[in-house]
Length: 396
Image (tube, rainbow, N blue to C red; front, side, top):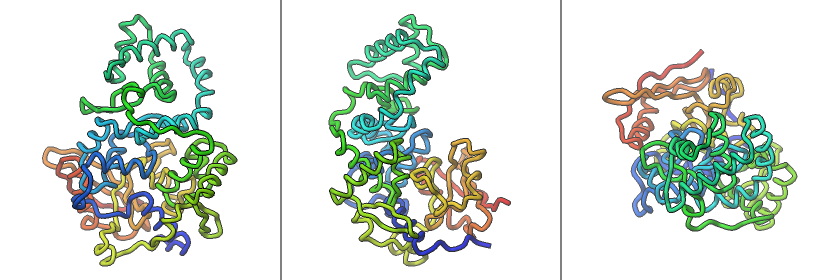
């Protein structure tokens, strides 16, 4: 038994969204001729999405790379090293990867929704204002002059300054410094996660937007990177009240950057140019001729699922806990066929090759190793390792 075919409206929605998400551009492989260098292409992907989930550092790098065919993990790291993209908390208290030029105005537009709760959290942690001020001063002093620090190195700086940092304080203070725009996570010089740097030194050309101009930019860029969205999607994504989200959508629509579209009787908003293009997902020889992948190996936390409040168009509700076990907020890597989630995939590093195993859902079609092999190879090429398909099984 296979999943029922989506309605015509839902099929269009999936097609538009795959295009907007950068997942319908080309098969993983060599970069098209005449393209900018890898780091600049990674930056362009980040610009298209505006912000993508960054909780899982490994997954977020593949999320960027698979949307820029021909790039490598080194290109993603280079984009961070050159200050083209940063990792920080732009909204909702959730860490994202963001174009460096956009992080400041995004925080100014959304910080009023998350910062008021910080004082209460510090009370729970036993972190007083004097200690917070001292930790801030030490961090800024230690980073001034183009320096970068890992979280462990910053903790050592606090210890040398005689501050007795309790274990629960460190994450909160790093978040607070980044959420307030003092720091961002920039270069990854030691092969690990991005290191902390001063925002004012690291970000060379920050954009300045505020008020309704910022709201319009948020709305337009959110829809540009995700296809047709509802006002509640935008409100959830930004953490803004629905009334404010609607104001941003109205402002973007007045600038003709958004247009309404009905999908199965529900109003959505999308970039007009997207609606002028095709929505039908090509298959078979037509897909191959157009370079459109029928199958994808997406990372955990990908915007394909996390960019929306309602996911039933691409993921059958009964399979949700297979993607997020126990609804614990940890989204697993997914096997996607023609825009719909068909299962999960797991990687196991080995001496000669990384093994990739797929677990497909019941009713998920007849995907086999042959269909997945090119995408495993593309993942391996991005990582600089050999990757091979191991088992492809159907879970019960």
